[in-house]
Amino acid sequence: MDWSVAGLTPTLPSGETTANPWTPPTTRTQCVTSQCNTVSGGSVTAATIAAAITSAPAQTYVLIPAGTFNLGGNVSLNKSNVTLRGSGAGVSILNGGTVSIAGPSGQGFWGSGSLLTGSITKGSNTVTIAGGQTIPSAGRMVAVAQCMNGFSAPDANYTHYTGGGGTGWASNCTGTLADPLAPWTCGGYAQCDRNGNRGENNPHFPGQVMWLTGVSGSNLTFSQTINSPLWSTSNSASLMAMSAPGLTGVGLEDLTMTDWVSSNGCYDCWVKGNRIIFVNNDIGLAGFVANFLYANNYTVATNGGLHTIGVGSENDQATYASNVLILNNIFYDCYIEENGVTGYVQAYNYFLGADYAGDFPHNPGGQTFMLREGNRSNMSWDDDTWTAHNWSTWFRNFEPGYDPVSGQIQPTPIDVGGFSRFNNVIGNIIGSPQSTGTYGQVLGVNRNGVDTTGLTLASLFRWGNFVVCTGDATHCNVATGAFDNSEVPTNLSSFPNSVPYQNSIPANHSLPASFFMNSMTAHPSGGTGLSWWKTCNSWATFPTTCASYTSPPMPPIGPDVTGGQDASGHAYQTPAQIAWNNLPLDPAFGGVVRKFDQRVFQTDGNTPPPVTAPSPASFTGIIGVSGSMQVGQ
Image (tube, rainbow, N blue to C red; front, side):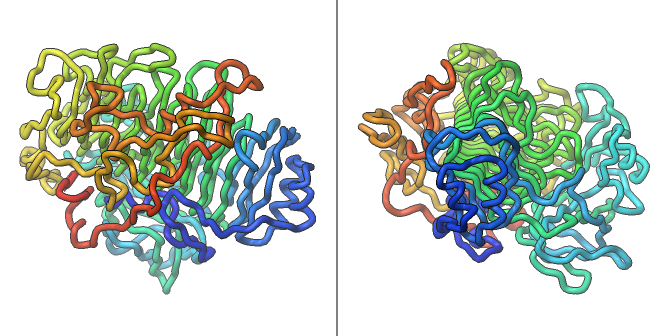
C-alpha cells in the first residue's frame, strides 16, 4: 500500500495542481459576481451563499467576511471547483445551519450496478464490465464492491440498500459464509460479531471508491489503483456508478460553524482550517468520497455524551470512503468511527476530552489498509463489531490510555479485536503511569472479540513499541522499544492461504520517520518543510501576533525519540497538541470552546518535502514500504 496517495491528488480533474496531498490549489481567485459581492459585502444567509455558489466561475472562492451570521437554513456546496472561504475561523462565524459538500445523493449513491468479469488485480487501475451490463460514462465516482467470502450474486442489486434491515441485499446474495483462514470479509454474522448475530438481513460488503477517468468499450480506467488483493470475480463483484457527473474540487476553509459539516459524493474535496462546534451525538463526516482531505481543523463537541464522527456509513454498504487523509486536527470530546474505508490515513491528530477520545473502525464491509501515524489519543481500537478488518497499521502514535482534561482512563489504549488480521503495531508509545496493566492488557489482542482460529494473533506484527506495563521484562518499559523476533509473523504455514502475507525479520531496529510521507527523514530540531509543523506557543495578540513559535522534532514519537515532554521522553507534543494547549478560551462559547485560526500553524522551513511514491517494483508483494521497513510482506 502506498499511503502517500491519500488526500488530494497532484492534479485535480479541473487541471489545478497541488503541492502535496494536504495543500489545496493556491491559485483560486475571489469571485466578484454581483451575487458573490453581496456575500462578501456582509449579507450572509443560506440563500445568498447558494446564489453566490451558483454564480461563481470555476477555480474561484466565495468570501465570507468577518462577522457573526445567522444562516436561516442549510448551505449546500454543490458546484465543482468552487471554495467557500471565511476570513478566518476566529472572525467568520456561521450559525443556524449545516454546511455540506453535497454531490449527487440518494441512498447508496448508486446509478447503475454492473457485474465485473475477467480478473480484478491488486495494483491495477482497470476493470472490465461483463457483457450485457450497463457501462457508465467517465467523470463520476464509482465503487468496486464484492460479496463476502463464500457468497455470490446473480446481479449487482446486492449492493442496493432497500431499508427495513436491507432485505434487498439478502435476497440477491446467496451462499454460505466461509472463513478462508486468510484476509476475510465478514459482516453481520455471528462468526465475526461479538455483539450478536445480525443475520442475513444486514450483510456487509467490501468496497473501494475511485474516480472514473476513462471508458474504452467495456474497459474502465480509474484514477487510483485497486488496493486489496481480496477482489476476485470468482466471488461476485460489481461496480456501482454514481447517477450523475461527480462533484470535484470543492473546498470549505477558514470558518467557524456552530453546526455540523459533511462531505458526500465528491472527489478531491477538502475541509481545512475551520472551527466546528457541534452537539450531535452521531454525525457523518464523509461518505462515498475519494481523496478527501480534512486538515488543520478544530472540532469540538459541547453537550456531553458519546459523540461519533462517521467516515463512511454504518448502515449503508454503498457509502464507502477511500484514500481519505485526516491530518493535524484537534478533536475534543469526540471520536472517529471508520466504516468501509480503504487506504485511509489518520495522522498527527490530537484527541482529548473523554475516555473514548480516539477512533475505532466499526462496519460495514471491513476496513483495509488503514494507517494511523503520529496521533495522540486516549484509545485506538480495531473493534470486531459486525465485521473483520485487514491490514491496519499503527505507527509512531502516543496512546497513553489517559485523558489529561477529563482524567478518564482507558485500560487498553490499543486493542486489536477479533478478526483484525494482518495488523501491524510498529514504533508506538502505549500506556502511561495512569493507565497501566500487563502487556496483554495495555496492548490488547482478542480482548474486544475473539478470533477462535488464532489468526488474529498469529498474523499480528508487533515491533519496536515502548509499552508502559507490568510483569513482562521482554516487552514492558523497554527504553529502546521491544524488538521481539517472536512477534514478527514469519511463519503462517498453519494457515496456508495466509502464507503470502508472512513477514521477514527486519534487518535492523531502525524505523523510518513516516509511512505516508515517503521522502521524510529525521529532523531533530525542526526544518521539516511541512506547512503545519511550526506552531505558535505564545500569543501576543490572537490570532494576528504570535510571540513565539516551536517546532517539534520529526519524528515526534517513538522508541528512538528522546527528550520529549511525555512517556519517559519518547513523546513530544505534536503541532495539534501544542496549538490546543495555547489557544485562548472563547467567552462567546462558554468555558469549553477555545478560539482558533489555522494561522496557529506555519511552515517549518522553506522547502516542502517531496511526496513521491517508491518505484512500482518496490511494492511487489508488499503491503507497506518505507526505507528498509516492510510491513505486511
